[in-house]
Length: 309
Image (cartoon, one colour):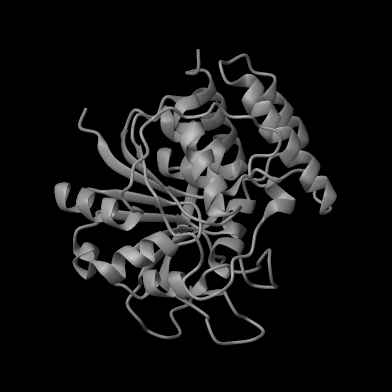
C-alpha cells in the first residue's frame, strides 16, 4: 500500500497525545515529522513532550524546532487544562534521539517539494508554524496536498464567546493560512463537541489492556479532573477527534464554505467566520466539520489501542 506522507504540527497537550496515539498506528500514514509549536504550554515543554511521545509510541521521525511564540501576540497557555508539563500526570521517557536543528517551516517545505501534491499537514495546535512556512515559501501553497486543522468554530468558542483556543492564541497566523489559497479541512470545537464521550466511555477505554495503559490513564484521568473543574462532565478530546476523523473519513459530516479569521474586532477577536450560507458569494476555502459520530470515534480509539501489544 502506498502510504500518505504526513507531518503532524502539534503542541502536546493531552488531546494531542491521544491524537498521536491514533496516528502512530494508522497504517495509511508515513509520518515524516512532528513539528512542535508553542501553544498548550511553552515551546520547550511541548518540544520535550513531542520527543518523549515519539519515543513512547515508536514514531520514527524527526522532531523539529518550531515557533516559540505567536506571530504578534504574547503567548497564552492552557495549563489549567493540560497541567504544568502539558500532559497532566503523564511522565514520558527522556528521548535519546539526536536533536533536529531544522525548523518546522523548512521541513514542511522540504517534504512538500519531495512529495508535491501528496503531503498532508495535520495541524492540531496554533497555526504559527504553518503560517511561517507560507510566508517564507509562498510556493508551498501549490505543493501541499492537504491541510487538516483542529481549530476554530462555526459557532461558539472556548476562550472567548466565539474564539477557539488554537485560533484565538494566534489569529494572525490563522488568517494567513485561511487567506493563502489552501483548502483547509477544519475540525472546529462545535463539530468536535458532537463526539464528546461520557465518563463511562473514558473508563471503558482506560480499562483496556494495552501496552500504554498506564500512560494513557495518567493523561486521561487528569483531563477528566480538569473538566470537572470547569463544570463539564468529561472533556472533549478535540485533537483526537480530529485525527480519528482523518483516519475514518465517515466519522464527520462537513459543509463547504468560505472561512476567514477576525483579527481586529474587540468583541470577536480570534473568531473563525464560516460563511455556511454563502452570503459573501466567495469561492469556498474550507471544509468545516459540523457533526460527528461519537460511537465511531470511540471505536477508532478502542481499535487502535488493541494494536498496542
